[in-house]
Length: 590
Image (cartoon, rainbow, N blue to C red; front, side):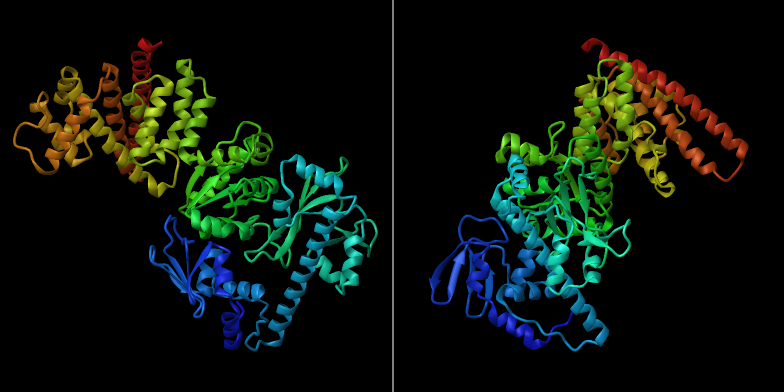
């Protein structure tokens, strides 16, 4: 990271026009000679509580207590670190930064990077001129207009057009004093595979999209073909000294301040999708640039906002990209939501067909990622036949295995019950089935088994209360010490043997009293069929066997084999009772 002299830092601070700087973010009203006020750019408000003092170049919000100097303001609004903010302000106010004395090698590396930045910026400006000022750019202008994209937003994104001749950029760059080695380093030209020693322009007859760093400096290009015979529709700059595909997000520099303020960032797939979103007023949107989401990109997203809204294409490739993106983002603790696009559409097509308001409305209706997955499975399955419903439940089971107890799980279970015309209780039981042996890290399985076992024990007791005739029989015949893994649930079962009709009666208090009260309330809300209690009884036995198998691993192989065979027999019995439960609950509704 560069180090700048104290004199340079002070020159930057002195050069800042605080009214100009803050006024670009919020409308300011003069209060007196050395005070301006406006709506705070850091929180939503209707009455201005944000104030700046231009002479001291400081700000303060009486509403959210945000405060600082010009550098801090840029750090917060532009999503930059201290050095990035200094460089951003130096660029804006024309200050030349002087570095603390560097060793010759470091100074040479810095000089080279500055030249490459200059080369890339000059090339981008050239592509822009070709798009807007040349006859050859007319077809590209027509294509972009046909996509519903306005000139103003395209100019903001610095979209351009690389002309057809093979040496336009090559010759112009040479005239500008750049070497062939520098052109190759940033992939503006490539070597010919047919004529040794020959180089030619990398991008020809293509719409160009500059790929920028957090400060908006061009690092490379993405380019879309316009010619019918061009083999690849999209190409990107190759990884090199400046550009690394897996590190950048398209439009990061334009979206970061908006994402920080909104607390959410929208992730699209293509360049025109992102531009369309920005044109529609969704300014917190970035793009994947045609790659699977990398850890570095996830880190960049997390630096923008805690919530990511996936708005990837609705085709199968887009859905696959969405699932991969979700896995990477969830692993880093990001909250994921999905904006479900119309079949066969991307955001740019929605803008072109239905207008900006439709894009905004689509993104405002985003749903949690887990809900999106559940609804997709429900929509795509055969809900009419029992076999189809079984297949749907089988697909849903691993999703629910990842969900802990809570409001989201209960809400989704109700949705599944409604769509499949099955009672909520049966759905809860079916989706919990085999959770103890769901795929996952071996170290996590005992924890999952314990959680599933506790849920099973309590569900069984609820059904015993709701169906007291059969419940009394089952409680009497069970070996409670053997079957119940939870001491609290075992105590509740012992109590219910004598108080099934009035679960909370008798000398109970503390945790046991609270559990019995909960079981009684939940049982009163049930309307179960007899087969449901039999299902739960088998689930109880299955949980017992899982505990026994986990305890027997590494010991007597013969004993372990016996337990495994018992488990398979219980599973077969369980499947039969599940089918009967489905028939008993679904039958009257058909």
